[in-house]
Length: 294
Image 1 (cartoon, rainbow, N blue to C red):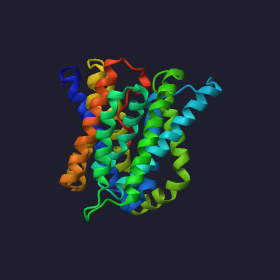
Image 2: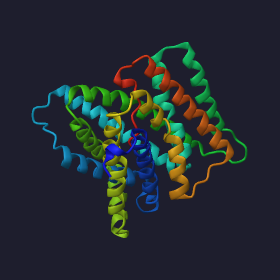
Image 3: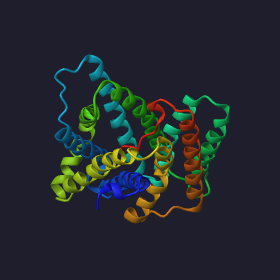
Image 4: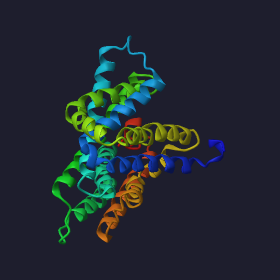
């Protein structure tokens, strides 16, 4: 079957699913390598795959291109590290819901419209609901890790837009992911090496994680965008929390309670609302929240 016969929205949903199932698959190896080891292996193999495919010509890069790639590398390292630390202690669906507040707030700041305050309040209500203590409150560390990942995701959006303007194609992303792997190396390489020695499945699993989290979703998104408006693209990207909840249920047997599901719906609705409003005003590329890298 040719991809042209697959509806573009289906391709986009497949991309979002791929990212979240990649994160869930990585979570299955936390006992062997820990969150930081998982981040290192995910970024390492992701970088190796992209570098092998893209083969960036960096010899002629200027200082500003290297600086932009370095900032994006920091964003990738921070975003992936914090979201993996988050899903180590709270359900993946909840973690991704909290992470979505980063690009959501960035879009709200960039729109500067009072009407969008309603969407901010809706998202805030979802976050407050997740932190509500009813005897089964989420660990504070997990909430803070996920919110921190959201902040780095906002930085990732801004940095990737700048890299896209300065570096052709995906060469900048390939270099930035390699930089991110180097940043995480001191914290994750020891546990990753120890885990790989104990379990022979670790390395092949993280090759799969890198494919699911990087190569597959990027290719699917590019195919979808050829036949999909950016407004619909943004709306479908906002389904990330729901897809994360599905991945958590199927891969990790993490069933969300009523409170978590309501919060997920509130944040997703806010993301869709802001996305639709932003697309109607034809924003710059930096306002388009891409599918998350985790």
